[in-house]
Image (cartoon, rainbow, N blue to C red; front, side, top):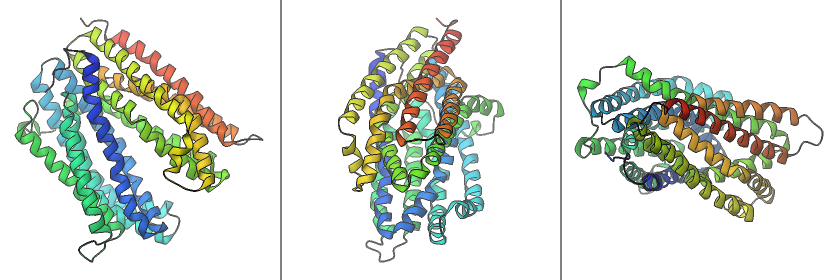
Length: 447
């Protein structure tokens, strides 16, 4: 356990954010490794794996519900110096992760094929997607245990073990991908099924490594069988914080679906340019997200310790750090956005669309950093409903105006990007106002 209730706030955030940023980058590389080898199998394989991989986003939304509640409540317990409650929360998160894993296995194997048959472009793509998904489902199910253990460590102020495990699982996936997908050394290529199997084996190895760490090295929270009996009251505490966070994640995918819908008439280059630009944007967001993800543990421990001044200082420090980083990245994108897009495609039309997207959308990077930080603070305060409300407000505003604009004469792609910038600014302002209200309400009676 690392006590975050004493010492410089900025140093605590930086110490946590650095390994977390590395871990997030590794997660991005995790997907790219499989994609590199799958791309050699043809268009249907790429489409099938991409299609099967969309199921991951459903799981990510569910893991958010589990992870956010675990981080918030354990950080509060650490701040109160209440180790028994921290242990109870951790063990109940393990129980919930096992339940969610069972539901994922059941749902994936009974509904996965039907889903792919509904959205697949052709029979070959559907077949590839099913082959990949059936071998990837065990890895998706195991993600819950990995998130539960990683979130517990983050709540206690520890992030390096999780980052190390992520590095090791990536290395294992890099080794397994060519062996299982292309049949290197075995002469028995499994194709897209090998991609799913490589990911599942790597995630399984990560779960084992994290479990060994908790068994042998972690002293503050650990496995206690007497805490494994389901405690519905504890589940309610966790999900009350985690459920809105999962809902917020789900709304973001609705937002993406609206964009794809309104730009559909501009053709494949427009969708491809947006897709590449969006992936670049997600990578650029990593530093700000790492800072924001550090905020719940730092502010949460101080909230539990009833140190209102340090809770407020955490927000101010995180906003400044995030804004400085995002401003620098904005200037970089304004300078030469086409360079980023050209790393992924050589198609001139796609590069033009992606570069235009990145140049305009980078104008909201600072505002997006503020939104990330506010979301982290809502988690620390134990109430994530305001974050969901601000995201819903942005989505409803954007969707209504985007659909209206798409039917107006002279509608152009850049109208969508400028609308996105405006609605992100609205969300940042609303998030900040809601956070001021929540801090005033929840910190009033603290020391």
